[in-house]
Length: 147
Image (cartoon, rainbow, N blue to C red; front, side, top):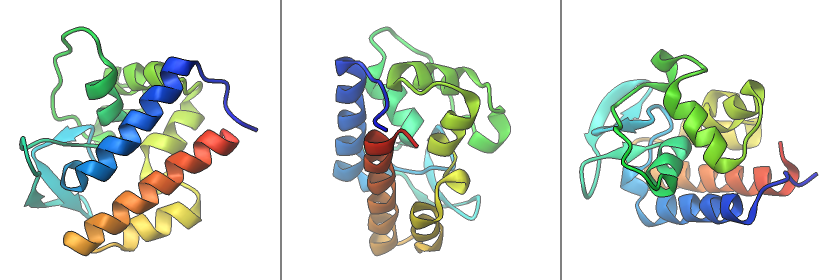
């Protein structure tokens, strides 16, 4: 069942997906925002372009916030499920409930067909592309099914 999203929320999902595809060297599901790309929770590569990488929720906050939002590097693992960035991203994207947010913002909770390719990808140019493909497939699946 498709999730009930506003037009603005659907547009933001599309913008996040496009940004991740356009800037794969700025995508990292381990952190809301970071200066480094991580593999197995270890920083191994600098983020591209402006020097900042983000996860799906981080990109949503960066692209969907109309007011000045002070953003800091906060780990998904250390911020807790109810971190301010997570709640803000959830509202922007129209994701209701802690469990639903976890299934989007925590790659370890993604369905296996998305989680495994993301987790197995090496942190090199080809692996980063595989991570992005897994994330975009995850986004498409959520927009089609709400799961």
